[in-house]
Image (cartoon, rainbow, N blue to C red; front, side, top):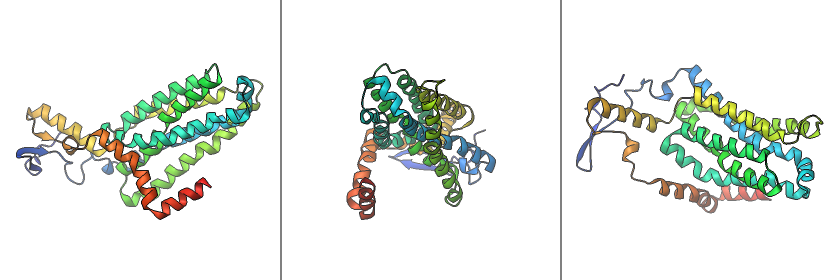
Length: 286
């Protein structure tokens, strides 16, 4: 149930109007994901972490069937390699705008929506009738497939305290690196097989994406605290009929567009103002 006893304790005056700012009911409130049981935390992290493996898989598996794609579409090997390059380019571009959405509507809607769109464009890429269509669909798949890399770190921070993250973070990284490690082995087998088409690289990705998206939809609860408090405030307003119950996220003055612009400009600020970031970036480029 919803605890109304703390309403007077969290009352504060905002813009000369008395509002009841809804918070968690003490440090042990089970609504707070940080207070979940260890098993529930790790189960959630395990499912969310597979999204990182999924997009890593999707980004690299096409690189193993470049020769087959080249022959099917009648293009050069360099041109066919764009199917992988454009996915990665869109992956980086989309990451700039994905994070603010998860801090507005919550983690789960972003996971489910973007992975569903990833499945659509992965299927379209597998059915692409020509080279141009393949490139377009791979680009769009990368654009929407970037979400896990920018959001599942936030999910981990929602669930674990800073000390516990020292154990959770390596697990997330391991899952993320498994995708690019396993995909080329599977893709190479598909490419050399005489029994299945090279397009099965896309079908394997589609099947995996469907399983991961279904697992998130069925078993992963929302973890973003401010959104959980927003739901709680809405429930309080419905129960009491008092519109003064508000969550902090509902009082946010910064628009989504402003936060998107800030998110897009942050990498450039870091590059030009942090010498270590600039040097490491140039090292990676060279």
